[in-house]
Image (cartoon, rainbow, N blue to C red):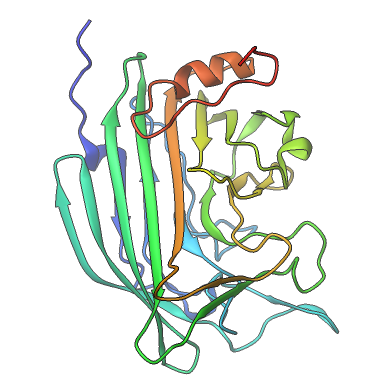
Amino acid sequence: MPIPALEPARLIALVPGSGVAPASAPRPYFHPVRSLSGTVLTDVAPADHIHHLGLSVAFSDLNGTNFWGGSTYTQDLGPVVLPNHGSQALDSWTEEEGRASGTVLWTSRHGTLLAEERRTVEVSAHPAPGTWSLSLTSVMVPAAGVPALEVSSSAVKGRSGAGYGGIFWRFPADCSGTRVFSAAGAGADPAHGSRSPWLAISTVTGGAPVTVVLAQDAPARPWFIRSEGYLGVGPAVAWSEKAVADAARPLVQSLHAVIHDGAVASPDQALHLLEHHPAVRTPSHPDRTP
């Protein structure tokens, strides 16, 4: 059976983010991200965390500026809302068939250009019914006059488990019956902080069962995932220690996703979907013989 042609503009949309409130760290983001049947898989400014913006790239601390939005974790007072939010702005964006890319400029709380990022998104067909594949890549270098980029997180500053920061996917607030699978085991707790090369989320949103199977390029970073209170996930750049990048060693991030209309009930089902993502070399499930 031939694979049906995709309509990328119907599956994922880029929002420049220039109208985002300063305290939410204005930035470009992707929303909505949809399944082939039209189920929306992202959320923007939900009541529980109004600074969560669809599928985006954000850090709670990049060279001392909060690009995540909301509060900043401090060692003395815990989370505090500070006037330290930066912003990201699209400098260019070009869309072609199945691929779009552009430059994002990261400006500090003081108005100083800190970083330049090349961001690329690719959409491709998948042989499974009701399924498509997505890849998001980010490559960041310091701006002229900035020696290095230093990424920190709340976890680095002492808040256990709060190593979030990097590519982050915020799912809709109405997700229910969520099941999480990874090479670390079933459930969000084993996946959280693990370096599993893949992670699968099967949930119900908008009344429809959907599955998103995620993967990273090697070496995998620890996963930040939260499924209680809200559903959000992404690779953590500064899970337990600062990450440093410069012009010779850019900060490179990647997230690959297979988006499937329907539920999966096992790791094998999730990995079977991931096998057909063109950018992913499918990892073995721990129970499989290599």
